[in-house]
Every structure is written in structure tokens, then in C-alpha cells.
Image (cartoon, rainbow, N blue to C red; front, side, top):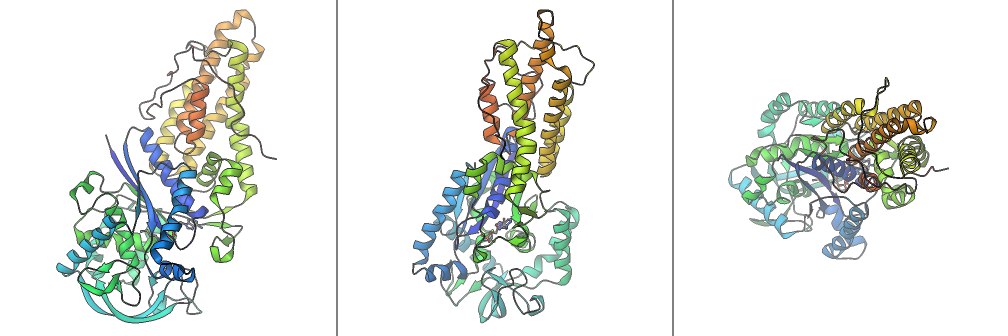
Length: 502
Ligand code: ME8
């Protein structure tokens, strides 16, 4: 059984989660579910990034001890993932003892092997992004080029990680593995970053203490990014050998904002530790709200729970993954959601499910007929299902969620069209009984097919379709063959799966 280790970024707990965080986790959840339907063994890890100056300051502003503060905010993340019914297997907090120990172990090892050394850092620092910048990278106003906030100038003793030592090896790895960083635009961005030149990385701070203590120097705490990146190892047991049960990650999901950390610093840390690199670092694009950045300070945070409540969990998941190619930016709007839900989910998919089950009720007393050959010149679902399924699998494996979902829609609309041409309602005479039954069987098996293709992104819809077909087992997408329904299942019509929104 293939092992698939999938990770999301771990989120800062300085504020509550919003739709951007939900997007990454929903995408990861969909891939996790996809691999599970393919019969693979999956470990899906998410978590929270709880140390650092930003979180420490926010706790301070709220008049709380940092630990007390993070213990509260972490609950909002846990609750959101629970409300969205995500299927993660692990949740790591950087304040977990197992993580603290792993970070200290790594820091000590890299120091002992000469990859970490003491020096002084002087220069700009963005607390919001927890990022060191060189002067020449700042924007025209001298602000952080990433978030455009004012930077602070720091001057302090710091331990440095010998990042530069590993850059030639990273370049080779990138050349040999063009999908190591995806999509291609992000791969090119990483190559450009390397071409511009990279410096050793400051990996400890002395001016505040909300962090993991450097094991051999109590004046320093570990730089929050160095700490956070190691969650991907500590989350599956590192340094215990057991981590190798899952390592290396199949896909590490990130937003494009944190590309440099994951595609430059992180692989170099792994090389220093002599640990294999992830197969793929997948950066996705940025959701904005009608052109504006979604951020707490702008007061336009979109609450994923509200959207899920208003439109339905599956519809929200569908929208996020279908609306834009994974990797590109998108604009959130209620109109966009309504348009996609009505057009593709209500009119196409929901309508087919409803019509089909109603016909089985009307023409076959609600019982799926026995499978029979359908003699017809028309291309029927039995003929075109396998091709769409194959395309779907390949596109999901390549994280082309929008196009994979398009295959689901194509299969559905072709089935709708075929049904329109077969028009069993015009054949309702005893001499046509066999033909009607053969059509109804194909229709029901087409719904079964839809439940398979819907499963990764719309798991509740998939389960509901299966329930209405009286199918109790979730089969394997890869080994699935047309003709699974045996006939004799009692169908339930039920309410529309996706009521039209006006
Ligand atoms: O950067 N559109 O945490 P963070 C799409 N703790 N995705 C968005 C988004 C938006 N508008 N806003 C946020 C950190 N995201 C670090 C990560 S990992 C070792 C440490 C998502 O809370 C996207 O995945 O700022 C982005 O990369 C992440 O949230 C940043 O979350």
C-alpha cells in the first residue's frame, strides 16, 4: 500500500483562522481523501505556529501570558477544522513538548556539526512576516516587501545557519526535479531567488523570550521559522526513527507567500540533517475579497464557518477548488459562489440525481433494475465513464483540482444529455420494459460513478448519493469497474442535493 504523507502550513495563532487558511486545509483534505479512495495509506498533518515575536506581542496586547493566549486561540483552529469535517490524522502545536525536544535536538546537532555558528545580525526585520530582509529588498517606502508594513531595525547576537553551504546541492535538486516546486511560475521564482544570491540565515533571537530556548545558550530562543518548519518532522515522531514510516512528504501545501521558507530554507535544513527532501512543495494562489487582501487589520476577514453554513460545506469546497486553477489567485464573492452552485451543482449534478431517482421510483417501483445490455446507437454512460474516471485520477494526482472537477461535470452533463435523448418517459409501455430497465440501470450506475468522483472534494454529497442508492460500501476508485450495482437496491429520492439559490 502506497504511503502518502501530506502537510499544510502551521498557522500563526495571533488571530483566528479565515477563509485563506481554510482553503489550504480543504485542498489538502481533498487530496488526502483522493488518495484514500485510491486505496493508499495517508497521514495528513496540520497544526499551529505558536512562538515568535508576533504571537508574543499579541498576547501582551491582550494582557495575557503567551501560553494562556495560544491555548485559547488554538481552540478556534481545532474547532474550525472540526466544523468543516476535515480528515487530518495529526495536529501539531509548536508548544507541544515533542516538538520542543525535536527542535532542540536539531539545533544541537547542526551546531555540533558546524552548520550553526554565532555572529551578529544587523538589519531590518518584519515582525508581521517574522522575516529578515536585506535593505535592497525593502519596498519604495522602506517597508516590508511582502506585507508593506514598517520594518524594525535589529542589532543582536545571533546564531546563523549555514544556508549558503547547501545552495549548490539545492540547485542540482531543482534542475533534476522540475516538479519539486509547483506550479512552474513558483519554480521559476525560486530559481530567481537563488540567482539573486542567498545569505546564511539568522536562526536565533535574544530580545524576547517567547520561543524555544537554544539548548546550549539560554540567552537565545530559536527563530520562529526555524522552529516552525521542523513541525513537519516532529509531527511524525522525529528524531525517533519511526518518522521514516511516513517520510518523505508526497506533497507539502503552502500559500505563495511562504514559498522562500519552504523551497529554499527548508530543503537546505533537510540536507544538513541528511533527511530526504519532500517530493513536491505545492504553492497555491491568494484569495482576495473583490480585489482587496483578506486581513484582520482591514476588517474584511471571511469566516469560513459562515460561508459553509450559508452555502453548505461541499458547495464551499467545490467553489474553492473548481473556481480557479490551483496555484492562481482568486476573488471571493457571493455572486461567484451562487453562480457556480446554481450552474454546476444544482442544475447539472443535483438535477441528474433527482431526475434519475424519481424515474427509478416511477418506472421501477424504486428498485434498481438488474444490469442488462442496452442496445443503442448512442454513446451511453457505460461507454464514457472509464475515460472520465481516468482523466479525473490523473488530474487529481497532478493537483489540477479545477480540471479534475470539470471531468466530473462533463461526465454529469453528458449523462444528462444522453438521458434526454433516450427519453425513457416516452417509452413507458410494457413492450419496452427491458429497455427502460437497461436505461435506469445505467442511470443508477452513473450516479454511483458520480459518487466516486465527488468523494475527494464533496465527501458528504458522495456519501448521500451512495445512501440514496442503498450502497453501503465505499469502493476503491482505482480498481472500480462499471457495473458495481447488483440491481435490487431500494432507492430514496430525498431532497434536492443542491437547492437553487435565488
Ligand atoms: O505563514 N489566500 O502562517 P499564517 C490563500 N506560521 N491562502 C491564504 C490566505 C489567502 N488570502 N491567507 C492565508 C504562516 N492563507 C506560518 C507558516 S509553516 C511551517 C509556518 C494561507 O497564519 C496560506 O496557506 O500567516 C498561507 O501560506 C498561510 O495561510 C499563512 O498562514
